[in-house]
Length: 199
Image (cartoon, rainbow, N blue to C red):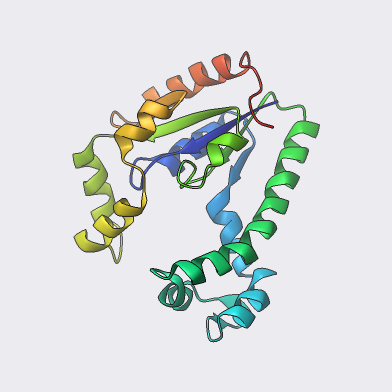
């Protein structure tokens, strides 16, 4: 089985692209959804113990947690030490199940794939992109989003041009869904013939 890492900066259309991979019958692992799951479950008591006052009703309050860890490298490291082993277990389980199902290709959707060295854990990388104007327009249309907040998010992410340069495959979402579906079909054909790269 070939594992594709799906990534792209905020507002590029990555979530939609992930849905279209799933629509094409590909098992898709959603890293963000898994974070939500562990924050509402087994990670909550561990995070509360490390960062008192960051949970409510047995769930992590992301705003309160952000207030304690964002901009504090030591706190961020401590949080990662709690959360990463839990996420790894879900990730492994997903890959095992996808492999057992006989899927030729599986997709792991990881927003900060390059930023966290995740490209070493997949066989090829798919980067989702669009033009900068459309990207800004999509993001600023979201609730509670401001230009300042957007700039802070983009500062944490590798520039789109660099991601595209490092990608094995690029999906451009500027022209709507049909070209994306076509591109996914091409990627799946090529992916099935790729050599396995991950350890």
